[in-house]
Amino acid sequence: MNFSLGKKTFLLIVCIAAVISTLAILIYSKGIRDVITSQYEARSIDISQLVAGQIDTGKLANVQKAILEIYNKADNKVQSDQWGTPEFDAYVAQYAPIEEMEDYQTLRKDLRKMQDVLDVDCLYITWLDSENECYLYMIDAAYENACPIGCIDPIYVDLTEFKKNPEIFYAPNISNTPEYGWLIATGTPIEDENGNTIGISGVDISMNEIVAQNDRFLFYVVMAFLTLTVIVSVIGIALVNHVIVKPINKLSRAAAQYKDNRKVFSELQMKSGDEIGTLAESMAQMENEINGYIANLEQTTSDLITAREHAELMNRAANIDALTKVRNKRAFDVEVERLNAGQQPYGIAMIDLNGLKEINDNYGHEKGDISIKMLCQIICQMFKHSPVYRVGGDEFIVILENGDYVEREALIRDIKETFRRNMEDTSLPPWERVSAAVGYAVHEPGSNERVENVQQRADEAMYENKKAMKAERKL
Image (cartoon, rainbow, N blue to C red; front, side, top):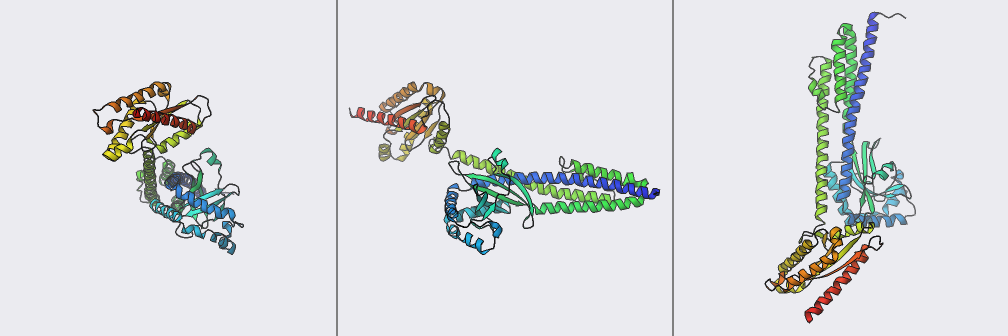
C-alpha cells in the first residue's frame, strides 16, 4: 500500500508525538508519585510513632484489660464483614460499658485532639489477636462511622517487616477502596513500662486530594499533547522540529529532573504563545501547587520531629531527681534490667542519711534538704566513676563499676571516715554535720545472682552499720 508524503509525515509526527508524550507523562507521573509517596510514608510513620509515645499507657492498659475480658468470654465473635447485621450489633453491644470508663473517654479525647492537630483522617488503637489472626479495635478517634469497641478485622497487611523493624508494627500500606479511596495506613506498637505490647497505634491519612490533583494534571497533559499532535500534523514537517520536538523534549527532560529539582518547569520560561507554551505554564502552575503541598508535608514532618525530640527530653528529665540532680528510682529500675541481663562484675553500695527526721523537726525541711544535698555531694565526690541514684527520701544507691569496683573497700572506708570527721566537726551547724550508714555487696563475675539479691545483702550490711553507729553513740 502506497502512502503520500503527507500521510507519512502525519503518521511520523503522530508516532513521535505519542512516544514523547507517553514518556513525558510516565516520567513526570512517576517522579511526582515517588516524592508524594515518600513524604506520606514518612509522615504516617512519624505520626504513628508520636501517638504511641504520647498515649497514657497506664490508662490504655486498664481499657485493654476490660476489653479483653469481654472478648475472651464472647461465645460468638462476629467480624466486621457482618457490620450492620443483628449478630454484629449484638456482639459489639457487649462492650458498651467500656465507653463509660473514665480512662476510655480520656484516651479517646486525647486521640481526637492529636487527630485534629495533626490533620489526619483517623487515629485508632487496636489489639492484635495473633492466635486468631485478627485485629481487635479498642479506641477509634473518628467522629463519624467509627469502628465500635470490639470490632474485629482480619490481618490484611504483611507483618514480615515488623520482625526486622519492631518500632513499626506494619509498614506504610497504601490502598484504594470504594469506601475510603486512596489511603495510607501505618501501625506502631504501644509498650507499657515493662516493655509489653498493649496495643497498636494506627493512623489513616487520605491521599485522595493529591492523587486527584495529579490525575487531573495528567489528563490535562494528555489532552494538551493530543492537541499538539493534531496542530503539528497540519503545520507539516517543516515546523515539526522547531515547534514540537524541541519543546516536548524540553518538557520531558524537565519532568525527568523534577525529583531532583522541583522548580524545573518554573525555570523553563517557555512563553512561545502557542499550545506548548500554555502547557508549560500549566505545568509550572501545577508544579507550584504541588511544591506548596509538599512543603506543608515537610513542615509537618519537621514539627513532628521537634515534638518527638521534646518527648525524648521529657523522658530524660523523668530520670533525674529534682533535689539532688542525680538519677532517681525510675532510672535505677532501668539499670537493674541491664545488669540482670549481663554477666559483668559490679557492686552495690547502700547509703542512708542519719538523723534527717530530727533535723526536719528541729530546724525545718529546708535544712533537711541541705543535709540531703550535702550527703549526695560527698557520695558523688567519693564515687567518681559510678552512677549515683536517690531511691528514697534519705537513701542513696551507688552501682560500683570500673575503678570504683576495684577500689571499693578503700572507698567504703574513706567515705565512712569522711562521715565520722564531718559528724565531729562542731564548727558546722547541725544540718551540715552529715552522717550516714553505709553497706555494700558484690556481684561476682560469672554469678547468676540477680541485682535484687545483691541489693538486699547491701541493705542488710547498711542496717548493721547503722546499728553499730547507734550503739557507739550510746557509749
